Image (cartoon, rainbow, N blue to C red; front, side, top):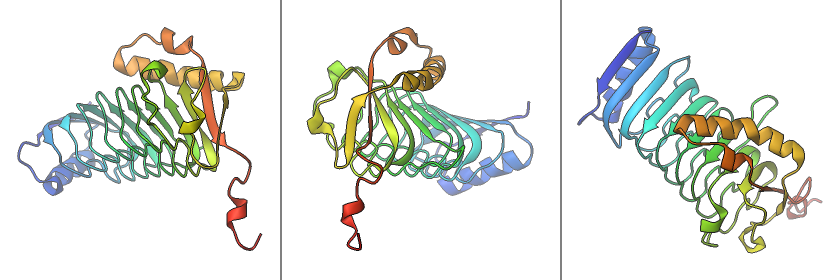
Length: 247
C-alpha cells in the first residue's frame, strides 16, 4: 500500500488539492491529511480506488463530483459534503452543515452525529445508481427537499426531535426518507409528501445499511435494528402534475 501524509496547516485549498491529485497520480492508495482547517473542495472530481483520511474540519463541497474514493473525516464537516457525488463514500466522525448530499447521484454518506438544513436536497437516482445518506443524530428543516431519488435514513432518537424539523420531503417526487420511530408529526411533512409505516421490504433494505453505519462508528446496531420506522415518500406518482398549466 502506497501511503502519503500531507500537512495542511496554513495551506490554501488550491495547493492542497494539487498535492492530493499528485499523490493519486503517483499511485498512492491512502492519503492522510492532518491539520485541515476549512480548506474547500477536497477530493472534488477525484476518481479511483483511494482512501483519504482527513483530520480536522474540511470546508465546503468535500467530495463534489467525486466518483470512487472513500473520504473519512475525523472531525466535523462544513456545508455540502457529497455535492453531486457520483460514487464512493464519505464517513464523518462528527456533524456536518447544511445541504449534505446536495444533488448526490451515487455512493453513500454516513454522518455519525447531526446535519443542518436541507440535507439530501435534490438527491436523485438512475438505474443501479442509488445514493444513500445516513444521519445518526438530528437534522434541521427541509430534509430531502425536492428529492428525486435515493434513500435518506435518519437514525436519531425520535424522542429528541424538537418538532421544528418542518418541511420534511417538501417537493419530493422520488426516492424515500426513512425516519426512526413509529410515528411522525404530520405538521412536519412538506408539500407533496406522504408518511406511512415502513413496509417489510423496507426493513430488509435498511438492515445492512444500519450495520455498516454501526461498524464505521463502533456502535451496537441492535437498538437501531429492533426499532420501528416510518418512511416519507411522494404522495402520488406525479404529486405536482397540476402545477403545469398545459395539463
